[in-house]
Image (tube, rainbow, N blue to C red; front, top):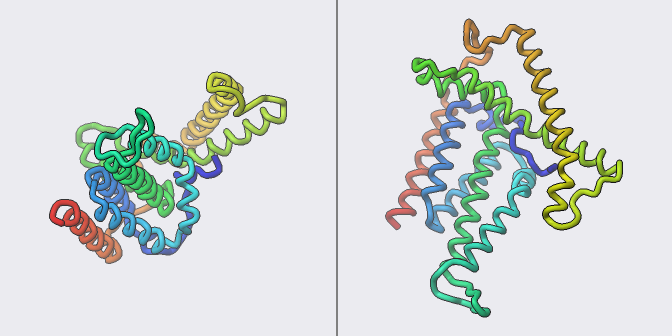
Length: 265
């Protein structure tokens, strides 16, 4: 749980930190869509170089970024095993009814790279954007929906709070686990059913703590006269600048190169 870093903000003075949150949100969403479309080795390799370069420019340690990927490593391994042993194609090695195929190895590598890049791209946005600025960016992007009577300010606030409290809930869960283990609770041993039952003494205090924290947050927002977007101005006025234009131009070139590698070469 200490490896879950999504939702955390790392202060910095890089161009990515200073970029407009609307641009970062749009680029993150487009990058995720692009990664789901790409299935070429060279296009995914270019995407990996682009994401790693973005991390280096932001000043965020690659070791910290890799640490954030640890919670999903089991999902990646499970996906790789399924594709290696259950894909049809040219067999490389056969053991009884199990056959490892060339197509299975290629597919497992591509899907694993896609999952890791998707999480890395999403994490970079939260690493370089404060929850307050992220809320304003989401609200501004959803502004056209406001004319359809959609509560854009409330939705943006909920998304921001959810991202903000992911590390807090993980820390709370770890404290509860240590407290229950100190009281003699057997956590993490036995078969799957026994392990699932052992987490009940953790989930109940966690839910109670989460509801209490939500109630305290609601009281704090109500005491500060928060009523959504009604009569409310933003402390952060967003304006596109030269940095945003430069980032946008570089990103367009990356998308064009990735599509050329995918569909032309």
